[in-house]
Image (cartoon, rainbow, N blue to C red; front, side):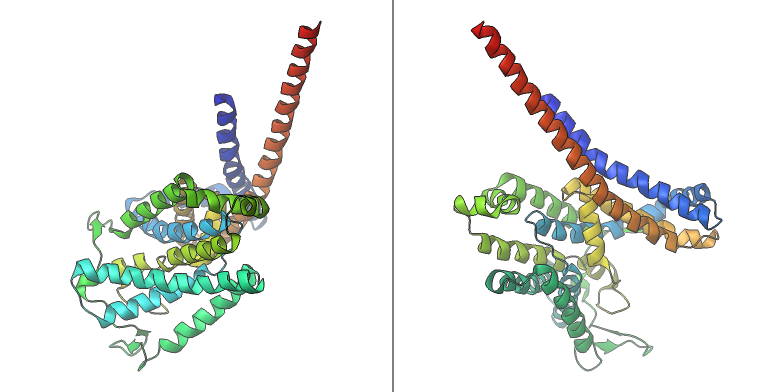
Length: 371
């Protein structure tokens, strides 16, 4: 039994390791093809990425990517593809900022209010896709993609001066009313020349622990995973598949709504189109894939993504094209999908071999006893 568990662990580690090795090899070949020296680029990224101020920036980026990755992972565990994390994250952050800027409560009420608003908006927006899938058979992929576009349009419409947005003093950008000081979350000050780590990282850890506990240690988590493995088997055991689909989308959307809060509560304290980067929701998909929907794996993948993005800024100063990091990220996602399939097939083959060996051993034993 211990041997089987050990092999499963090794196979689980093998896929992301193979993907990373393949990504670095292919990126090195691309650099060589463009006449650039690959080891210099990698050395620059590693040297810059391991500086103290870079590590703070990487952790802050990884915090948002981790929450987005967990939001996607909830759907993945049920074979649901929540492509709408981007729209859910932006809607959640926008309305949380608008509500938070409109009221002024003590900190122990103000921050929970902002969190509840963000989660509620994100959950309701994702729930639309869940209801469409269960009631009309609409693919959640198509529904969430379209909901992304609608969400961005809603935010763009409301974020206007005279609506829920306000021009800054320079008259160059529009944002929501700034949060009062009671809506500012604490930071971990690492030093004047290093920076501050977002206090929301603590909540991100709690989210990860909660995700692990609910999916791995509760009846609801078992039902969710069983639906993902076999809907017919889950239905036969008394699980309502439609209810699980809607519930999973609500949970996924609620977590997606939290994705923008590290920036809102710890940094910008207001929502503006130029303050919240695009693509975080789609990064969450890559992070969840690379981390195999495991809370620890997703955390490592989020840190890797933050490290690559931090290193890309330095490459420009060294004469390299920063887009090479985008190539590396794309290759990692492609490689990890291929690597997981290769490892899965190898594991299945090994399992079949073991079953064959056990049956052969039983046959020999039976023959010896009969003789």
